[in-house]
Image (cartoon, rainbow, N blue to C red; front, side, top):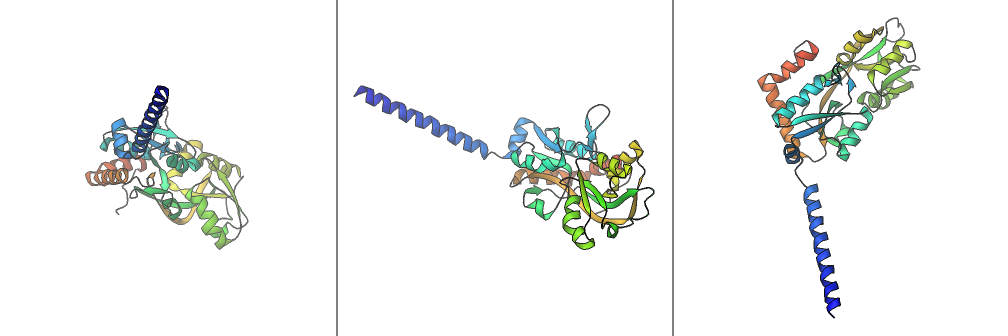
Length: 270
């Protein structure tokens, strides 16, 4: 009888321990992401890391660029330190969803499809996208000339979606070659392995100057993309704090300082 009572008591104790652990796990999973970041003193920022002048590794082997400076300033206003983790653009959103990053600050364009997967702050930059061809090109002047051509574009980017879903149905079939970074895209364009690419001029200028690519932009902007800070779906407190910090940056002039530093011009008035 005593053994039976002892066994019963052990079973009850084990059940209570498991219940306590379960409640703790549930509590931790429901913890406010903003509070968790501030308690840790660090916000993990996902970037592509190869997209100058937005985010790239500088000569001192440190991440640098417009996005990096924006992220550092946001972190400062949340009283934490920004820590950067780079990976290919196509994997940034899935990694954010899995919790590898707290936020993405890597020229993530706001689209309806992405808004179903993640939440965005208010935009922090608008980029005009143009057609880029070789210097000696004479056959492509606009996107209407893409039919039957080979077009290079970043894998998983909004530009790739634009080519496949919006442009190809309008102008006719063309071949799409995808790349993990802008430099490789431009190398293939310069070598004649693709006929054209699309990208924003801010991104192309430093890469072209550094590598001596013989390429040029033709025609006017084909679209304008608004990029924002991305957070995991439902992280309302963090999203609100980031929006507040962005607005303060714009009001006190710090945003303009960062913009001029990287683009040598004032941002357009909103």
